[in-house]
Structures are given as structure tokens and as C-alpha cells.
Length: 76
Image 1 (tube, rainbow, N blue to C red):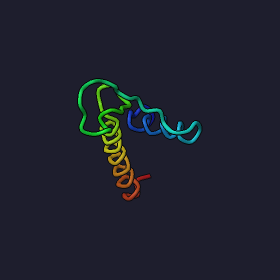
Image 2 (cartoon, helix red, strand yellow; image 1 turned 120 degrees about the horizontal axis):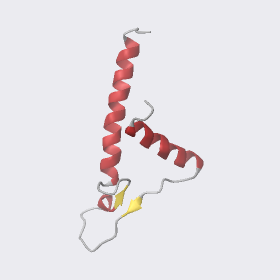
Image 3 (spheres, rainbow, N blue to C red; image 1 turned 135 degrees about the horizontal axis):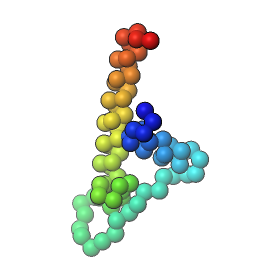
């Protein structure tokens, strides 16, 4: 799983929360109207923070599902 972007994302932010404090999330400031505060925060410059986390959670869900299937099958 090393090198998987979703795993690395959660590992990095887990380390920040455990060792340093709350994660640092970037913020966009501009003159365009926004419908929610979620549009202002980001981990990746082109995506809202909620979308980045959602994307990585979907990947992690698939990793866990594959692991459960692998171990449930009794494969060594």
C-alpha cells in the first residue's frame, strides 16, 4: 500500500493530528460568492477539501473491502 495516494494522504494527516495538532487546511479568499464554507477550504488547490477527503475515503473503502475478501478466503 506504500505509495498509494489515499493511504499517504491519511497517513500524513493522521501524523499531523497525533503529533502536531489540528491539520492545516488551505483557504481560498476571493470576491466570488460561495454557497458554503466547504468551497473555501482545500488540501489540493483545484478541489474543495470535502471532495479530496471523499475521493480518498472511496479508495480506502476499496482497499479495506479487498483486504476483507483476501483474508476471508483463507489465502495465506
